[in-house]
Length: 286
Image 1 (cartoon, rainbow, N blue to C red):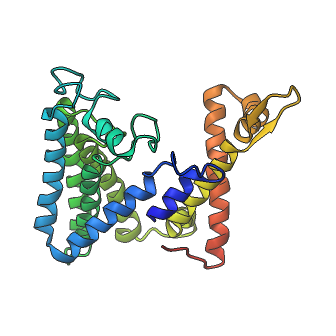
Image 2: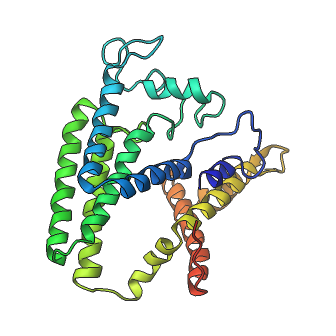
Image 3: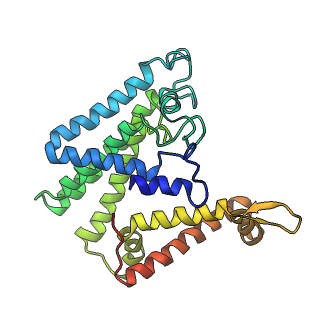
């Protein structure tokens, strides 16, 4: 999965290994999966919960109290989450300069993998809870309670360590875990407790059955649209994405709604491909 992520970073024609981006979404999933799998093999749920808490607390302490070389202590000498002068960005530049998504930083960088591991562990613990012998109603209630509590705690943490996705802050981990638990509780109650299943669930299952394949397809198509350029009648070269957007979607609505329409069509196109795989019984796994 890590290798596939690196491949996508250069697709289709940007394989300059001196500046190829190393990290990415799939790479982060791969690292977190390995760490989580090892912990599952060698530890119990109490240890896993403790490690997740230590990851979140330790990350906050590093981001808040460790001086960033050349800049000072966050919250005193520099803003707490300064985009380029935080510890995460500094370490990424030291280790991966020239291979970063945003030039001076990377939203899936090295240090922010620590709280991402906590996210993965919370998912593991949720799965372990659903496999217990408790009643379906009790499981649903616990998911709702834990989700609500996590959202409240995440909002409280936001006061001292703001919710920030690019830095994968501890408050972001707790808050989004809460949202995920509430969504899972709703789906669990509908599909498993009430058994309300039927054709209406199929469109959702299409993406879920081939989730990684759907992501890969979306990244490949997006890369082609963005990186393949064509020449206009005026001689100007524009990306294929811009050409399609300006001639198909922009005339239909305001910029915001045209962008939304483009996104919906893009998702629908990916869904159609996954639906064909589903109809043929093809499941792509890594």
